[in-house]
Length: 368
Ligand SMILES: *Cc1c(COP(=O)(O)O)cnc(C)c1O
Image (cartoon, rainbow, N blue to C red; front, side, top):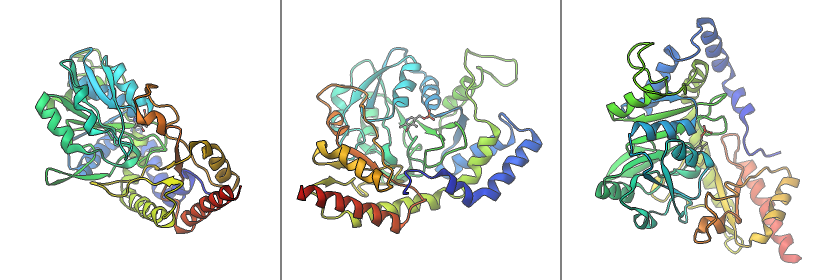
């Protein structure tokens, strides 16, 4: 069986460290906030080279709270890609803002050429989603944001550790726009053992406002409530687990990068049938997902069934685009895409087996 995701095998590899820290936290009773959360926030910000990181309840909350912390006019418009997870949209709507969709490009991220035509006097922010582990083309987005006075909020739920060069400077996803939003849902590259998320920023006010909003609108002390906020905090046990994983994530992401290169090598020459993802354009992807496109969409069901029958799990991200309008490429592509297994649990043997099966499927198909 070649699993799409293998959290158990990852746990086995770091079991002693995880068990030790969880017991330590239980002994100390540091359940919400406190020393382990503060430590993780410090380490997380340091890794990304940014001033602040704030642990929150999950990735969707991170988006909502970050948008609220930016203090955008209520009802103003936020531009986002049509090809993303539903949570990106929920964060915007729950913050009292209006989503405006832009189509995706060949790399499935927001098509930067199509952003400007969607900007109106009501637009207040652009939210690029660093989808499948890659970083969007950020320079044009930053230029537009300056030209039109817009905020940039990065959805980094799938891209912890992904890098890009922006105006000659190497940057991590989450340290490029005004604010970055992360999810630590277990299935993400950097996943907790429950829900979790984080907001990153270098702006003092945005950080303070987000921290207050996520913690009952609190000010400096427990019963000083400055505003109506909510409860969306990272718990101590998740923070401890994330600190342990932070010590391994670079290596895991490197394995994913190697696996992507292997897929490219083994799947070379199948252009008639498959469109492979773009490998290393301007970014260093962390390959949260490895998504291929079938040239004949009517073969997708059989293709996925064939792989499944031979013990290979795959998925579709996402089967339904956020807007059903025909103008969007994402709508067409949602019927063509397949996510192949990807993760640090895989090596050359598994990748070559998946590739062999794909070639076998194509051969059978040709003979039919
Ligand atoms: C997972 C995900 C989210 C939401 O994160 P949760 O922690 O599940 O709330 C938002 N945006 C994208 C692109 C995601 O992949």
